[in-house]
Image (cartoon, rainbow, N blue to C red):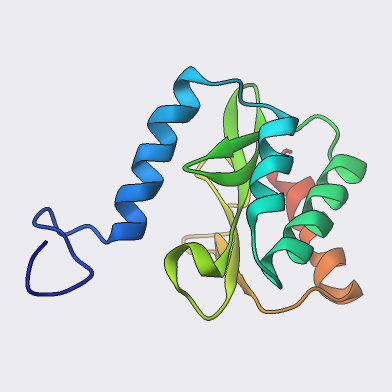
Amino acid sequence: MSKEGNKSRAGLSKGEIAAMKEALKERNAKNDESAVLAKIAQMKEPDRTMAKKIHALIKANAPSLSPKTWYGMPAYAKDDKIICFFKPGQKFKMRYADFGFSDKAHLDDGRMWPDSFALKELTAKEEARIVELVKKAIG
């Protein structure tokens, strides 16, 4: 550990190193909806409630996406390629959670577009926007 506290010699935070280790475990473990639900159950509030809602929204509105864990986070894949994911704020000691999209998502809009959204709370408005974005992302 360097003198910078939370950074290793490689420049990665403890959270980033832990996420990489989880990704290696995921390659060898059963990685399906039960793994996603287990990760969600381990989360603290308010991340757990948001992750549960997002999981339900995606299952109901984008059934072609398969739940998987990705770097220890709930994620959703099409043809085994991650399309979107929920990053709990507590995982990286952030003040908010993120709902993000990979480069496999079809969200292109000109030369610049958002691919991640900060979440502090989910209301009907945010839920509708997530459903809209996920549907667009899968084409």
